[in-house]
Length: 85
Ligand SMILES: [Zn+2]
Image (cartoon, rainbow, N blue to C red; front, side, top):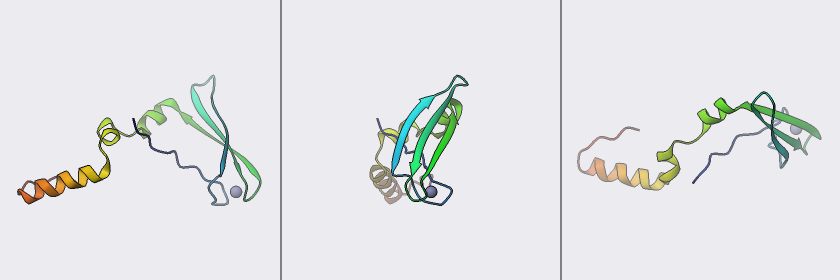
């Protein structure tokens, strides 16, 4: 299993260095509660579970490291077979 990180940032542009809590709401959304040390601000991000599913890597992406994909594409191109980018 692999995962894709959810990008988090503050209004000031800094990335938070600490996630305080991850939770679920009665409206079926996920909440990420984090802290920006740069400007001492508490931030919340909510994501619908549908939205979470859309941002999940596909099974192919999850199972195949990027280098393997690049090597496969190079091999196929050397045999004259075009691969989608
Ligand atoms: Zn900040």
